[in-house]
Length: 280
Image (cartoon, rainbow, N blue to C red; front, top):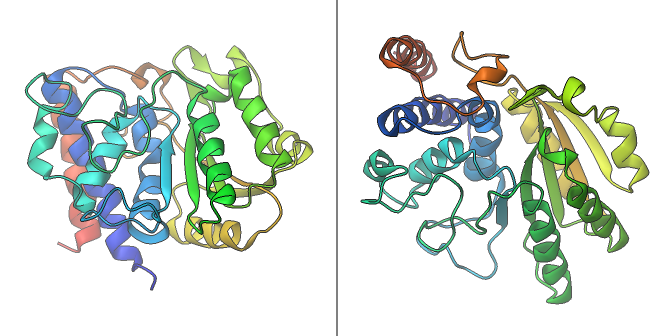
């Protein structure tokens, strides 16, 4: 049964607000790439994946790997809203008093299937999970989200080759194509386009999609699930810093916390956006 779009929109809008509070409170974190991926994570956890917060280690669950592991200000708010742990825990982000590390961590955070942070490695783990599922004749699916800066790592392409070789149609990768990385535009740092032609040449089924259009994302994930004989990748076109006017399309907001004035402005914009989605 599909989750209604209003629920998904609220989850994403609230996720951005919670993520902002997390990073501001600890004066550290990555907002730009978290905000660009928030809609993708919302639809995965609330609509697409077979997961159960009451049984997070169910061997038959779908798996998720945040290959761009620094974007926990997106992942943790979504996990909290989904019920894996209380939202109250988010205030201890990057604190020794809590369990929420700055990068995705599976030992202490319920709902995290793989610890990530060293860019390029997460997709290899996702390939291994999908291959294990095939070998064990399990029906679970594996999802992984990568950054478009991250795919400059050579290991990513080795993983892409392996996934195609073993015909891992139970694997769906999503590349968050926001066009920016820590040093500037991806086109300037290390051009990777045309991604669609490159990935098709590597044996993947490619689906271009607007990464902020929840209905389009839902249809794309349905198409990925129906695809057989090859892994699928969604090329999700997004806006880095989505939802905060002065952060959008600004590489400077890759990994820094806002000051008091910036925080108040950003929070005002996100509170207004959430109220609009909630119909208040």
